[in-house]
Length: 140
Image (cartoon, rainbow, N blue to C red; front, side, top):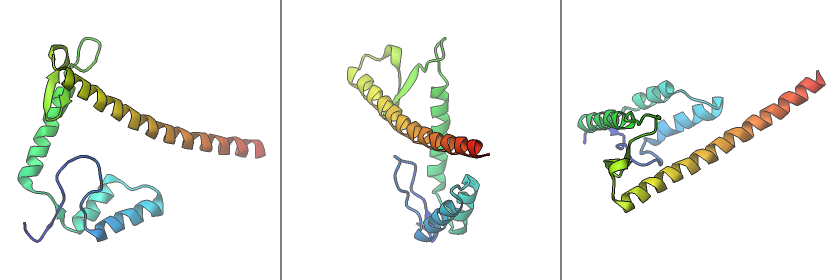
């Protein structure tokens, strides 16, 4: 490892390994404006010399391209034909491994649950804004 700060490789969601100063600056900007662009984040990380391992980044890029290819394989009605099971891709219609299919279903259901929670949070905020807008319209 050289003197540059290396970011951890892609993995499950969680708190990344960043220099504390970079994280503090990102969080400060986020809380000041209640938003931050990916470009601003990249600029801050560059400022703190955060970089990744070139071969690992190339592998990650290739895997991402492969994932997009697998995700593009659809049946006539537009449903995905190939789904991930760990680091393998499975043609669902040809899979006879009940455990693999159950694991795929559990992962998809967990993702749906997380998205439902996020969607509910956004819907709650929309509802608050709608109520405020209605009050302002009545007052005007």
